[in-house]
Image (cartoon, rainbow, N blue to C red; front, top):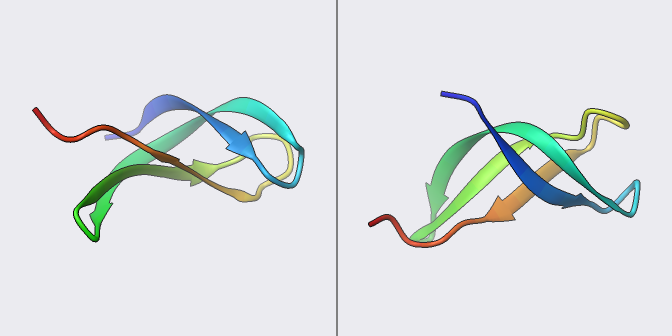
Length: 50
């Protein structure tokens, strides 16, 4: 299920909204997606699941 998240693109050096999926690794939830402008992978660390 893809949702919209706000994250920082390192290549563009700007905050952008991106479509992403929630994944879990090392007991951390994070949204992973692609920058809509340059195509670089973006991640955003999320809070713990309630």
